[in-house]
Each structure stands twice: as C-alpha cells, then as structure tokens.
Image 1: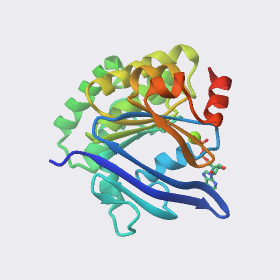
Image 2: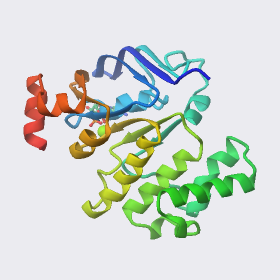
Image 3: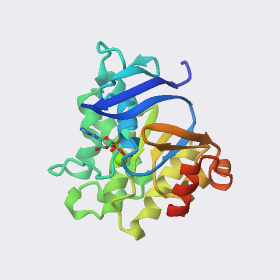
Image 4: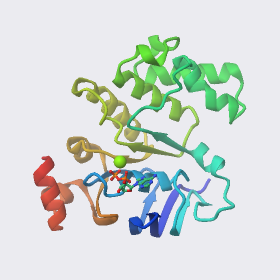
Length: 244
Ligand code: ADP
Ligand code: MG
C-alpha cells in the first residue's frame, strides 16, 4: 500500500466575508505527529475540519491519502472512514453504552461482524485503560474517561490518520494526563496524528513537528526545539510569552 500523504496547497476558507484560512500550504507524511498551536480564532479547528471534509474548501487543494477533498465528487464517507477525529467536547452518543459507542461505526459502515466488533472494542478499551466501562453509559463517566472512549471509538475504524481538536481543553486538570498518555502511546505505535493543543509540554515531548498558526496562516513550522527554544516570528514569541 502506498504511504499515507496529506497534501495541502494554497488552501483558502471563508465564512461569508470572513477569510479564516488565507493560503495554507503544507504536507504531512505517514508517522508524522504534528502539534498545531496558535491563538484562539486563528483557524486551527477550521483547518483540521477541512482535512476530513467537515468544512467545504473555498479554494486550493487538499489531498488526503489520494482523496481530493477539493473535488465535490469525492466520497466524503470514504475519507471519514480513514480519518478519525476526536473533539474537545467528546461527542459520544449519549443514549448508547460505551461498548455500543465503539462498535457502532464498525458495524454500520464497515459491516464488521458483531463478534469481531465486540472483541476489537474490548481490546481498545483495555488500551485506553477502561476495560471495566464497557457497559457504562457516557453520562456516568468523568471527562477524561469520556475522551478516552472517544479515542477508542475513533480507533475502532482503523484510521490511517487521527485528528485531535483540543482533546484536553474541556478536562479538569487531573484528567489531562491520562488522555495525553493514551495519545503518546498511539504516537509511539506510529499513528499519524495532527493535534491542535495548548499542552506545550506534550507538544515538545511527543511531536516531531510543531506548526504555529495565526490569522489563518502558518507562521512557523519546525521541530519542537526550534519552535519553543528559538522562535523566529514575533507573533510566535509573543504567543509563547503568554502561554508558557
Ligand atoms: P480556532 O480553532 O483557532 O480557535 P476556528 O477555526 O474555530 O479557530 O475559527 C476561526 C474563525 O472562523 C473565527 O473567527 C470563527 O468565528 C470563524 N468560524 C468558525 N466556524 C465558523 C462557522 N461555522 N461559521 C462562521 N464562522 C465560523
Ligand atoms: Mg478551535
């Protein structure tokens, strides 16, 4: 199989008159673990969402694993099966058990057998440290547990790429570590991951690349050491002064 590639060329996205992405050009390769940092409102979520077809592209091209998302004929459902996404607010199905949350998409979209989906879900629950929660309802879980279920649910589709949009921003501080640990483990296993985060320690430790965005543009794209220790752009310096 060809290696996963994500190619973004001169991507623009506007909401009405508000141009949110102003010409993003970048590439991601299989195994990349990229943290995207930047001030609120700089277009980070919008950018991630264009990578699995949740936002329509205004102009430019986005090619994810051979799928041209700038082409309206592309089957977005196909793309979304290969791209897992984890949101700040978990978005679990509230009326389903943890197990059903995880097996739903494999059963419906992949036509996996019930046995196989079940076994896989239990394996994934073990991986995220929640073996005992298979029959729990989401509302009985802590935020950190919900987010780990959300990660397991995304992984159940065997994605080639995982997108994380501030996965720990809604969590109480004591829950953050468990979620980051699961993500670090995934990175170690070679999962390709794009992570919007304010966790600078995690970015430094786990990412092979850090991208700083502001005002809908990429202002810096380099190694964590370079970005955190030798920031070049004045707006990155300013941002780091505020968050570190
Ligand atoms: P970030 O994730 O960096 O905080 P976002 O991508 O969420 O930034 O938002 C960037 C800008 O796009 C903001 O000005 C926001 O108000 C606007 N925006 C985002 N989503 C929509 C939408 N669905 N409709 C209109 N404006 C939007
Ligand atoms: Mg956001």
